[in-house]
Every structure is written in C-alpha cells, then in structure tokens.
Length: 68
View (cartoon, one colour):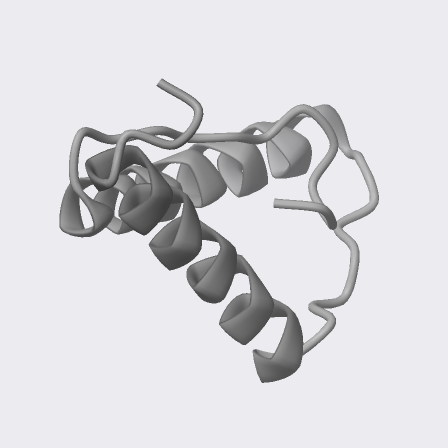
C-alpha cells in the first residue's frame, strides 16, 4: 500500500492476497491511531485499480513461468 509506509501483504492467490491486504491495512490503521501517527488520505479508486492490476499481472506472469 503506497500510502501506508511499510504496509504490505502477500498471498498464494489473488483472493488470498486481497484478504491479507485488508488485514494489513486494518492493523496499520489501528497501530497508527494508537501511536498518534497521521493517517494519510486515500488516493482513491484509481490507485486501488492499479494495485489490483499489478497483482493480476504478477499472478498471470507467475502462472506462465515468467519470473519464476
């Protein structure tokens, strides 16, 4: 998540990765609130669309043996 420093997630499948992303975001926000850190404003759906496309293309490349 580009907006949340050091917040990342991974999964064996696209579905699992998206589930883990949600968990990572929730934990990051919870910690930031507890520590009094500034929470950045979301960049919007366009950023999310780009992230999902990157995940999809990465998964597609892996299934075709690219980068393995």
